[in-house]
Amino acid sequence: MVLAGRQKAAMLLMSLDATTAAELLKGIDPEEIQEIAMELARIDASEQRNTKEQAKVVREFCSSLRQEKQTKAFSMRGFFGEMLVNALGKDKAEQIQSQIRITTAQKELFTGIRSASTDELVLALEGEHPQTIAVVLSELAPKKSQEVLALLGEEARLKAVCKMTNPDLLGAGVKQRIASVVSERLKSLKGKAETLVVKPGRREENLRKLAIMLSGLERDLRDQLVGEISKHDEETGKMVRNLMVTWEDIPSIADRSLQEALRTVESSKLAVALYGSDEEVTQKIRSNISERAAAMLDEEASLMQEPLEKEVLDAREEVVRPLREANEEGKLRMVGR
Image (cartoon, rainbow, N blue to C red; front, top):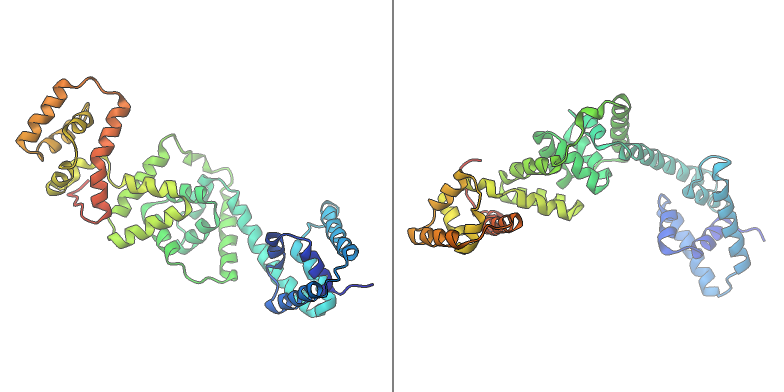
């Protein structure tokens, strides 16, 4: 029996798991999918599934896969489109294949961009429109996207993040042109990225710069941008939020805001936090606690054994925590960094 294209397609889909079947159907017009679905329903309702014919279709599919290295690269969508020729006619099948070629070409261009190093991408995106940067960042893996974002200039970084949170509707043609432009720049920059070698600690330094920049925005916009970062990488989003207010920022915090935060911190923790602290931070804290609290702080310091470095860092985090909470609520006032 000679099977029609839609019958082959239906039998093949019945042999696959749902995820793989869905991948095969991408790029196919809804009308064609509906016809294949009807064929699937007919086979299922008749309860006359021909397992031999089904196995033959699967073998044909696998045979095409094995020929990948001998002929041109195998395309699942291409194979699926050929199976539709008998059912839909040559014109319809060619129309579908044309759409597939456009999608594949676009995907291949971004594949080259994804394989570029972080430093190469930063150089390639320098001076580009924020929309271009946003499109490229959205095509990268979350970790690499964050690395690139952290190394961009502050203005470019902010505008690109804004574009990512409020994306314009871009057609496939526009994205393909963006991919082509960036790909060409990457080719011209091949081997020139050595100047951007990221040193240990550079990532936190850049995230700190990003955090300070975001903290100066209106609360709603700030939260929107940090939320977008967290969608891609929750740990990095949390790190950016924490870096908005650090122990070193205490001298820049308005007196009233600092006083409210220090009321929640025990004298014993504050004494540990101040161990080995910069004089500026120490004076800022002492000038914002009462005489009684200062006396208790001195008593705790005199009785305290030399703390471990981790104990000091943990204590400082406890002092900073209420300041971060106030910042999250939009209540923290800064007088300059």
